[in-house]
Length: 309
Image (tube, rainbow, N blue to C red; front, top):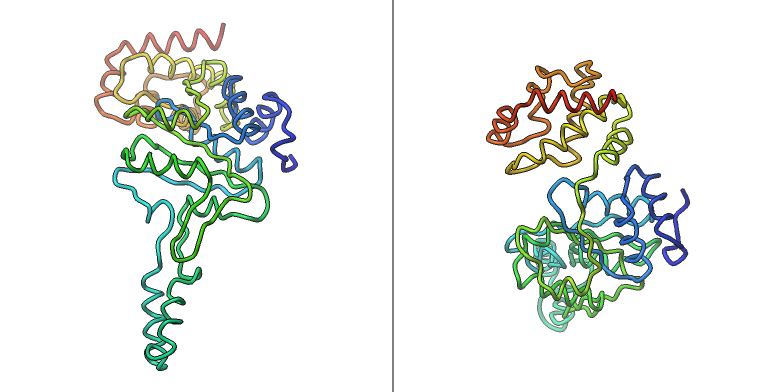
């Protein structure tokens, strides 16, 4: 598929078709939100439980648009040096020692040497500056991942960046985006993201897919899995998500589970193999115990009925 001009994208249907061509199966609401974010040049805030495909949206958008994929992984205590820029002190020190060895560190050359230490060649561009300073080709896709892990101060700083798409480095000047990056912000909602950031973004809550769409996702991402097994895996996974687990399985886990069962030669859910492969779907021991104690045989039987009805 040719690289699109974002402003020439005409509809949510066009977005959905492009994402499907890059092996991502969106629902109508997500495709519409992406379309509006692209056309309005607004960041898109995606919230939802882990494993519903929020991060993958940004990766697929980068593949489609053709710009670089730039990821900023948020965490508690993240600051400007990790998110925007820092100076390469080791290279600056090496440059200074070289100047001292050649006699340039004193006299008339001293002021010039100080200016050289803050030349752009010693500037380490972190994700936010990379996205803003990008100038060639299609715009980058900037993923600000798990913003709910960062603290309030960083969230406030992020608001300033997203308002102007500009960063000032005091020793050099201001970098301003020639074309705003496509920004996707994700949150697992471990805490509430502040209203100010939500107002800056378009918002979409990403649900676990319904069974029919999950079957389509499994078949798209793991074509070696039979249709019957994909239907059973999707049905069983949907039931398991309703068991009140600490960490319900995401779509990535259901794909892995279907692949694992296929490698074992299964075309139907076999209880012994389901138990043996449960670690590909459910990643906490207590959750595994709950699944096993939750009349697993009935869950598997119901899934088989759905596939063969």
